[in-house]
Image 1 (cartoon, one colour):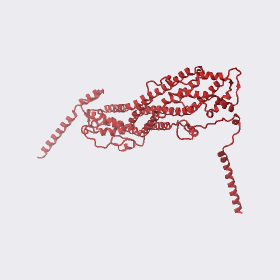
Image 2 (cartoon, rainbow, N blue to C red):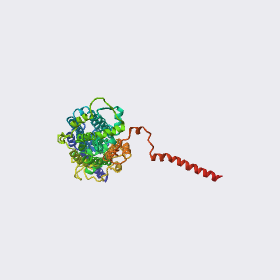
Image 3 (cartoon, helix red, strand yellow):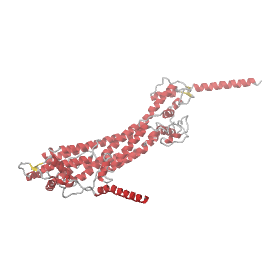
Image 4 (spheres, rainbow, N blue to C red):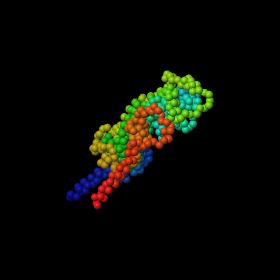
Amino acid sequence: MLKTPVVIFTSLSLLLSLSCAGDVKSRSCSDVRQAFTTKGFSIHNVPHQEISGEQLRVCSQGYTCCTSGIEDRLGQQSKEDFGKLVDENSHTIRTIFTSRHKKFDEFFLELLDNSEKSLNDMFVRTYGKLYTHNSEMFEDLFSELKRYYTGGNVNLEEVLNDFWSRLLERMFQLLNSQYTFTDDYLECISKYTDQLKPFGDVPRKLKAQVTKAFIAARSFVQGLMVGREVANRVAKVNISPGCSKALTKMLYCPYCGGLPGLKPCANYCQNVMRGCLANQADLDPEWNLFIDAMLLVADRLEGPFNIESVMEPIDVKISEAIMTMQDNSMQVSSKVFQGCGHPKPTGIGRSARGISDVFNNRFRPYSPEERPTTAAGTSLDRLVIDIKEKLKESKKFWSSLPDSICAEDEVTDPDEEQCWNSHTKGRYFPEVVKDGLTNQLNNPEVEVDITRPDTFIRQQIMTLRVMTNKLRNAYNGKDVYFQDSSDEESGSGSGSGFTTEPEVVHTEPPMLEADKSDPQPPTDMAAHQQKPLLQLLVAVTALTWLLLWLR
């Protein structure tokens, strides 16, 4: 009697179940197809009604609007979307380094060109043929300065010392044209440049200013170039399989679930981005140190190492040095003759007085108001102020990149209850993990192997570290390429690596014969040589006492 109602109830339940299942299976995918069309995706294989998702590997395997092929294409699309998001959010910082590097490089090169042109124009008008017949030494000076600035392995101290030595040789011959000078004699003259100080204090001051200014300028432009290259490289993210899966799930699984308009929750997005950008975040500490070093050198460019204030008046400074040489020509010639010997007369009946008159007519002070402007329309101070503001804004960029991406309205939904939480519409409960590779161990959304750092990112970290070291040296006025040898010579830990202390002035240069004699060893060297003898004597004495004691 009871079997009939039970059978009837069971049959009704089965019919209801099949009816409900039929309702689920018959749910339309028209919204999804429309959303795909709007995005420009092909809807050729998109079903019109939901199908079983048992073949899916990332999205839910319940009823779905996606086939396995569509899921694969969405996976590829999610990588492209992610790449665009990183590219767009890093565009500003990459543009800053690219545009400012171009501006600074153009400015410095224009400054050098204009300084050379200014010197040439001034010296042609002031000294005439005396300059044009000897202009190659000035051309060589500027050529070497440009070669240094553009990255050449040039020792600025040697370049400047060579320039002043050559200038002394040429001027000495012109001021003493009644004599014949051999190459050996001219070489002898150059040996006494530091002692004679024929150009006064100009060479010492100019060397200190030029070296520090050029070291700072070159390092700063190189820093902008390195910042540009690192930013461009790091912005091209290497997407791991775990990241790809998480991106697909966050960006496109709502489509497969029939919820194409649903955006990810903000905290959910942050966990995905922190997992995908874990290695980029590890760049941040070294990046911040690099930015700090750039700001330090920028301060130097505004102040004591301002290359604009050094190069613009360089023609006047060299002219002052030439005037000083002319004023002291009699004393200089006398001391050179004393140290290098008396040269042979040329035999031409032209007196020293006549040559001196020529110089008096030609070598006149240059009027500052006649100076042409250099680097017209630009100012180093304005450029530096602008870049400093931009550099400060770029600090902590890589660690804050996930926040920047997930803050976009196009990416996430600010309503915590009306967003995609990786499974359905609703609040996202897991906590947001910290940035950096080691903190991704407990990332609930992205599988990250924290034992395998990205080698490419590590290379960029090393690139920044090397550049930061160069910038710090530049801040202290030191050129990293010549730091060791220069420190030995200068004996001081500051400055450009080239001594800026006043040089000892010898009122009388050493006689030429003294150079040929064997110098006596210094007292400390003699003591050093006697030390082993004392040690040997002590050892022999001790051994003698030991033998006597044993007997």
